[in-house]
Image (cartoon, rainbow, N blue to C red; front, side, top):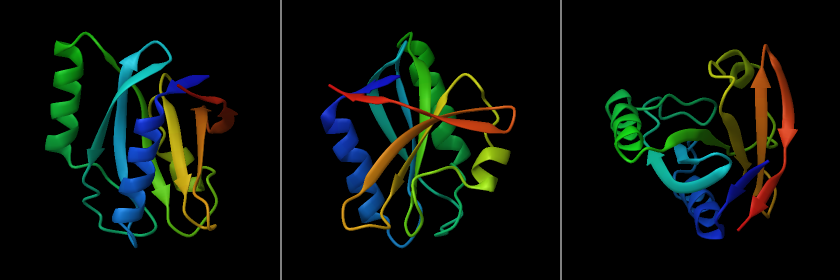
Length: 131
């Protein structure tokens, strides 16, 4: 399970909508299963089908998290036109089995946010508790 404050969920969805038609992306930092902060990052691919973090922004988040004695809990991205489930590319690029992967789908009228654990090429949905 992952616990995310409502304002951060709203921030993820707002970023996803604002960055249409491209995928939005970012990192979630906190402690244990509790998200404390959202870091929207630039999708340097500028694509509606895939994303890559800006390396300088990503490094800044890792450094700030370490300084604050926090950890990267999850990364997130949007699927502008497909369901909120990991694509084959998402699974292939899921390099860290210790974090969760969140996907917000904008394919339907109401955005759908889901979290996944991805290990050894297998994804499993994880519950999200809104705090």
